[in-house]
Length: 84
Image (cartoon, rainbow, N blue to C red; front, side):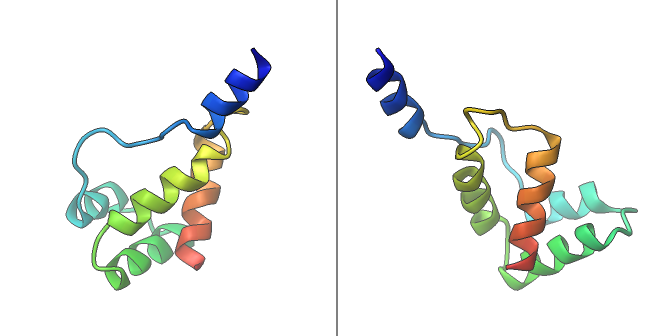
């Protein structure tokens, strides 16, 4: 049973539901003057969209499925992505 659980956790697929665009992200970040928000928006503009962000975020958050994906994990991963 443990091997099956390990296999399932290792091969679990994380995805995001719904459509999100650069304009949608801009709307969410409107009024947020934090360094993190500005860095993320700049990175998304350089990347010409959110596709790379979503792929990277899903891949990085997969590591946290066992312990939980929460606000803190997402904030940390968005910051790491922005700084990359």
